Structure formats: C-alpha cells, structure tokens
Image (cartoon, rainbow over all chains, first blue to last red; front, side, top):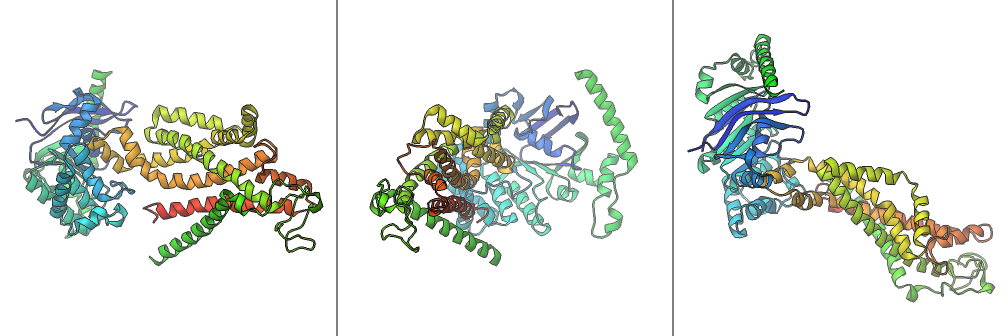
Amino acid sequence: MSACLDISSLSATLASGQRVLRSVSLAVEPGEVRALVGESGAGKSMIGKAVLGVLPPSVKIAEGSIRLEGTDLGTLSAKERRRVIGTKTALIPQDPLTALNPSRRVGPQMTDRLIHILGWDSGKADKSIRQLLDEVQIRDPDRVMRAYPHELSGGMRQRVLIAAAFAAEPRLIVADEPTTALDVTVQKQILRLIAQLQKDHGTAILFVTHDLGVVAKISQKVTVLYAGKVVEEADTAALFASPQHAYTRALMAATPRYTDPMASLKPVDDAVLAGLSAEIAAADQSWRAGHG
Amino acid sequence: MADARAIGQRGDARLWLAGGWLLVALLAAIFAPLIAPQDPLAQDLMFERLPPFWMQGSQPGYWLGTDSLGRDLLSRLIYGGRVAFIVAFAAALAACLVGSTLGLIAGYFGGWPDRIISRIVDVWMAFPPVLFAILLVAVFGTGLSSVIIAIAVIDWTRFCRVVRAEAMGQARMDYVENARIAGYGRLRIMVSEVLPNVVPTIVALLSLEMGIAIIVEAILSFVNLSISTDDPTWGGIIAEGRLSIHQAWWVLVFPLITLFLTVLSFSQFGEGLKARFDPVLR
C-alpha cells in the first residue's frame, strides 16, 4: 500500500535561483501523524503549501515529486491537480482570524465545499457539519452556523475550521501551526481536539510546528528541518529519547521549561549552526553544478 | 461596547439626515409637475427678480423669488433635480459597473491583467477630468445621454483604483487560499469570496460618485454643454445667477445650497450605508 503522502527529493527555488527547499523527502503513512519541526524560515510551511498546491508564485518547484496516495501531483493538469487536492486534503490553518470569510455566515462556508466540490446533497453536508461541530464540542451548532466569523472567538473559529477540515473526509490534513495564533489556555484544548478527531477518523496529518512540546504530544513520527533541509527523521519517542543530530539536541535544549526558565532559554550553539551551514553550502554548490 | 453603540448611533443619524434630504429632493424631482408652484419655463417680465418670500417686495407663490426673466426659482430648482438625479444614477452606475469589474480583476488576479489595467488607469487619470468631459461632450454632442456617457467614461477609474486595492488586500487573506485548497476555480473565488467583502466599499463609493456626477453635470451645464438650454438644470441656473449676482443674489445662492446639500448627502449616505452593512464594522 502506498503512503498517504510521499514527498521525494523535493527542491524549490526562488526566482533568484536560491534554494528554499533542499531535496526534502518525507512520507506520511495512512492514519499517522508526522510532525514537521524547525525554526521560523526553515521552510516547514513551504512544504505544506507545496502539498496543497498554494505555493506563492515566486517559488518554483525545481525537482522532485509529491505523491498523494500514489498520484504524482506534478504530472497532472492544473485542473486535475486542483480536484485531487480538493478531494483528498484539507488544511487546518495557522490564523483562524483570517481563514474564514468575514462577510459570509459560518454555516454555508463549512458546507459549501462538501456540496460543490465533493458533490454531497445539502442534507448530508448539513448533517456531517453538525456531527463534526458536536465532536469539536460546540454546543449550539445553530447559533454558530448562523454567526458571522467576527461574532466568534479565536478558539471557536479554530474549532470551526478543524470541524470543516475533518468534515470533508480528507485522506490527509495539513495542520500549519494550528495553535500558534491562539491563547495559551486555548492551545491545549485545540491540540487535544485535533488529537481526538485524528484518532476517531484515522486521518493522516502533516503537523507543521516549531514547538517540540506539541510534537511530543501529538505525533508518532518527526522530521526536523533546518534551512529547507531534513536534518533528522525518527519516531517521536526515539527522537526524544536519543536525538541523533547535534542540531536536534540543541533545539531540545532551547525549549523553554517551567522548572528552570532561565537555563533552558539557550540559543542553538554556533558551532552546530556553522557545521550545518557548511554542509548546506557544499550541497548547494553541487546542486547548482548539476542544474546549472 | 458603549463606544461602539455611540458610533453606531452617530452613523445612523448621518444616514437618516442625508437619506432624508435625498428622499425629499428625489420625490420632488419625480413629482415635479404636481409640486412645482409655477411653470419653470414661464417668463413674466412684470415679476423679474422678485426676492425670496421673507424680503420686501416678494410675491405669494414665488417662494424663492424669480430670475431676471421672471421665472420661478423654486420651480426651476425642482425641475432641475430631474436632470441631476437621472445623471447621478445612470452615470454612477455605469462608472461603477465598468470600474468595479476591472478593479476586481486587477486586484484579485494581479500579474499581467493588473499591469494592463493599472497602466490604463494611470494614463486615464492624467487627463484633467473636467476638460476631458467637455471634450467628450463636444465629440458626442450635447444631450442627456452624452453627459451620462462622458461622466462614466471619466470616473470609472475612481472605482477601479479603490476596488483594486481592496480586492488585493482580500486576495491575500487565508480564506481565499482555503478556497483554492478546497478546489474552487479562480473566477468563482473572485465572485463569491472576494466580491462580498468589497461590496460595502463599492456601495459607499457609488453614493459618493452620484454626488460627483451631479457636480460634473452642473459644471457642464454651467459652460452650456449639458442638455438643451431650455430645460432647467442646477448648473444652468447657477450660470444665469452669476450674471445677476448684484441685483438678485438668490438666483445664485439657492441652487448652490441645493447642490451642496445634495452632494454632501450622497457622500454621507454612502459612508452611513457602509458602516451599517459592513459585517466587520457593524
């Protein structure tokens, strides 16, 4: 059986020729949560956007392939690609405040996709949305579905978006730092909801985050990214038990801890970064030679 | 909360005052034959330059006095409103349709459609608008429809620029990206996701543009390039009043006040509507 998502040696460049993704390979098996960790600018969101077909126009995929359940997205026509992505994937976005259309009521925004893209009848779509709203613990679905987005709190909107993502019954959900824009107290609930729904629906998730605490809670596999390059890949438990790469160890040491806040706010060691930079520069040089 | 409500009420007062004046002026224009106390074209040299009703020497039935040919000023203003409102609605709608469509396309699609449309707008706006209007009317010939066309041809750029900027901002929002991921086409996203968020702006601009259209029409009338000189127009009355400012100031002042109130009301009405119907501001 083929992987739900299979990215192999994906490289992406800016118009200037600079590489932003450096031969990234990663796979998400059906029903598995894979975390994609890295600092800001490491290209982790870029990978999510590439999978969902919404890379900014300035970024071009130079090499490699993205397969959704065995279908190579690169070989499809634009229209066909939209259809495959639209039926097989969903996004839980980073910022729930701008991810809902402010001038449309929440209900139709949630059912639209089910009716127009997946071709469900409106009764089935409505029932499914209500079911999902119940699963994300929204107690008065009627009020929420009639509301405009600005009438709901950030946490409520994120729950609505999670419900909408799962309602489409996608094979793969890309969660792009879904808790970053939320209040700390809400973050935990949202994370628990995503984990619960993931377990119930068996949906594979590519979970993009910079927070190793989140990684430990939600994922089975981890890919660590630095400057668009995969640094380490492991089972979550194994990674936390014995990180292999110096960068991963440094990243873990830099995670803030309540028990000893001052000691843990340690920046990544310069020697580690220098080693990585040299490695990347060498790789880029040989890549450029090959792609002149 | 209290602040928001206070702002809402102030917005409402603005909406009602402006809307009230527009309604009165519009109804007067529609029912002009029933309301106007005199025939707006009837000349009576016995009654030339009668002052308004509160001044010495005024005549009953000539509330705002008469002009130098003895025509009743109030009746002329009421009939002049007909031309003003027809021009306001027709020209503003035409400008809005053309400008908003192009602006939406430029703002949402970006890239080469945006470059082409934006360059056209830049070139267009380099023409001085009033001279452009005079030139257009000179080409099309005078008459109501050429005045309307001229105003629409000049002013679509106003809609285009504002709608483009607004659509551009909306196109960057995550909900647009979400619709892309869900599998919707660009055209459908533009119409059903982006457009609803631009509509409040379009409405406000439309109302503003109606006021501007009235001014441009008055300017064209003032230089005698609007419709035939027999029909009273606000601009035409102002042009006549200017000649007799020392003998009969009211012939100049009352049409100016009417014009001012109407144009102000249009812009305020538009802002009020926007504040009321924008779900985010509301």
